[in-house]
Image (cartoon, rainbow, N blue to C red; front, side, top):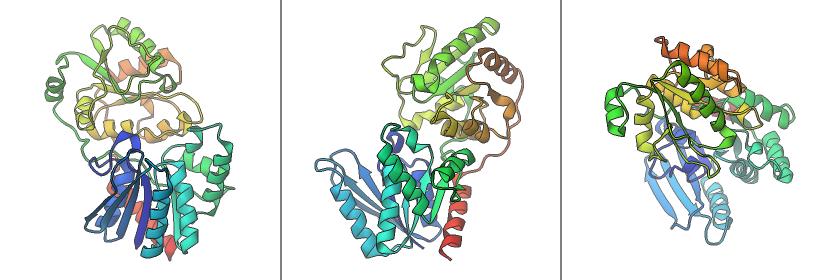
Length: 356
């Protein structure tokens, strides 16, 4: 098959040209490795020169939004679709790319696939006309995929009860078990403490304030625990003096952070975003063999479906503390986790069935 994939160049701040990351990179990459001709057209929101790079069956194209806006990307996408005559046009990474993929595919007579890893409508809740365009595109696309079943159900209802398939998230290959003592030494962390950690956006919408309340209560029962956090710190978040903040670390250090922990938090709030979130940090922790304490919301609960005892009720500090103490005092058994190879195989099967 011949595939044209549309995506932003820096999802979650990772430059796909230099930092392999997530479903945006590994699904196209693995489909190319399976023998399909894949063209990945990226939009950079910085003022950068255009890029073309060929890696076997994977062809990279990058166009910049600045200084003249989206027109160069739209022209490039339309031209590639006309010249390549792809079997599929696929929209990754944001609401705009799904809308564009469906429209371009219809224009050139190709099949269209829209993929979503979050509830994109929650990003800009007030922009209702965009939501209407998004829902129309979902209804018209040949295939729609989502990162988990609750998001798939929500998108299905938004698009008039059309079927939506699940292509699960996964941890990238750099996440695997490493020496805990070596990782702590690398990061300057104490070797003999119980370290609990949180890695990601330090923002009120993610339940960070309750994290500090949970830790304060936990310290009463387990004085030797420490809380280690890393990620972008929102301006309105003040860290308690006893919290160890590692800063916003480069991506290559994140596996060491996770492997240095005895337990990792996966917190979220019940909301249009949190209910449909499938946190990649949970997959990364599981791949590293680190247990997770997560908020019992539909998306997180599905990711931890083999470890339901690791879930605590939203805003229930006592429940969190009890579950944490139980986890730290046991050697939890880990169920196997799928990888991007499995997700790519599922996607390939969907594409083949639909086109035939």
